[in-house]
Image (cartoon, rainbow, N blue to C red; front, side):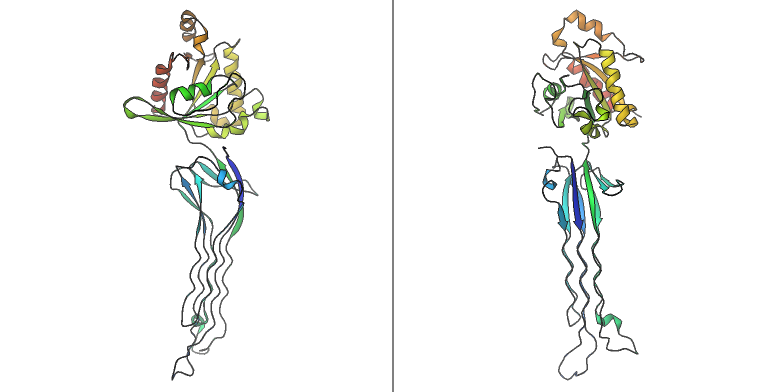
Length: 330
């Protein structure tokens, strides 16, 4: 199950209290203060792991608490600090404040860490408060409470290419054809109900990643359909690959609608590099396919790519073009 959103509560450990104690040794009837310091409370740390792909593990457990620090002891013995708790999340996880929605940190690389809640400092024992005028203090410091907060975790897949298209445009068929990803494929809308990430093995051991999201329908930015829920997963991509059914009555209009939905969701998406491919070319004649390859996308000097994931028509040309654009200088 793909889970890309979770709200959790975190609590760092409290600091241990300082101790009030005095030296009690033979022949030293009035020993000085010997209370140790309390240990610091454990921290709550979020760490990104490349081998995780979903926030599923955080769906059921909602409270994460680090250990408290141990209190100080006599003979100047300090209490042991509480153990940190490390919450493992996928690379691409964004951490936001629940109340304000403010982005606190973006775990966008493997091994990245964020100190989400700091443990409380341990209290000082009475040995720290001795002075020439107060050589036997009978008080110590209490440990400080650890930080606590509620946070939102949102996962954005990190991929080179993001596939965008209407339901049943052939996105899942394409990603299964060019990578090892095996999404569910059927001849009806909304076959894809969650994002899929595929690794494409290109020439000479080169690779790039492709993200497939559920199909977008007109009005998606207003909450219609499924695609809008997953559009965050193409916000990090370098290129958006639009896939349009070649049998559409008006593929120029289809492209315009899809582009408008992206702009309405996030203006940043409209400025990303774009490639437009007409899919299912195996359903038309070779002569018709050649004519379509000469057609320009309305308002641009760019022509359509014509492909078929089933017959592999135009796939090599598509991969060459994707690789070329991925490595174009900004």
